[in-house]
Image (cartoon, rainbow, N blue to C red; front, side, top):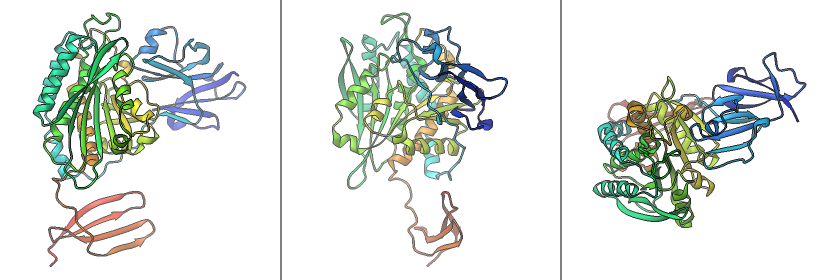
Length: 439
């Protein structure tokens, strides 16, 4: 059945028509005879495309998107391809009332001095050195000898940081590759949870094949080096929960490494996972404002909120969010019911260098990568729970409500001073010292 559609700024969305939001644009549609304005057009139906880079547009250059938001496109049903998906793009019906990409309000939390101190210990030079080393290899194709060289390098780095390292054999089609796993136990008493930090280590040159030059600087030396840098940072503290670093093989051929890892994960380990943080392409600035896309699912909504708050509190990043996970190593975890989030540079489809010999260091934006790492590190600190932070004040005084939706709590802290926190009807505001000494 034909529809009439109109693309408008999100702030102007409405009119009772069916709609779907993609960032700062909304597409409205209704029956073909519905009046939506002079600029409206008709189509036999609307489809949503989710793609890696420009993979769908490169394969179907004659298809003109009705709405283009980079990783997500809306196309006419008249342009529907014969197949609905491969490991680089997916086509599905556009659902009315959906938010394909959201732009959440920037709401900062009170900065935690311990987290700020931790973020000050991020080492851009160390991150850049690891990324540069990975990208110096002729390729990191999952079935190549130089992929094994990259695994050897990363394993040595993890061991030097105090991680227990294992190498998990995997199959990639008819070939064999591996995942690299580094574990560091937490120090908290009692049962401990698990926080997982992942990226894929492999690279690919689609035109050149397995033997083609594939430096993969952004895709995905940027994420793999990020795992090592966050692993280094975490190793400088004691944490309540366990942390696991994973560098996957076989991602570019269809998530082979992460699918096989999740399939082999015991139920007891799945139940321990508090969060999975996946980094895939975090170092190419494709927009005037530094932007990050956080992609997850309802099961990871809490982690999405934490990352967005970390970005607002500790970085200048613009954040977009999506609950349409696709084509990276967070997906197998989500499909198995575990809370996983992808962090990826905004507007990644504008990066025309990936999956080719041109994915080089010269196209990277180091400050963007540093900002994304700051956001990720701040969220990780909350998930892992530092044992090095000063003790929190313990309630020892009054709780006062002086109006609807307002609750004030006064406590004596471990420093013998009076501290205050309050609820404003929507969120808690963290403790502030009122000074003094209370005997």
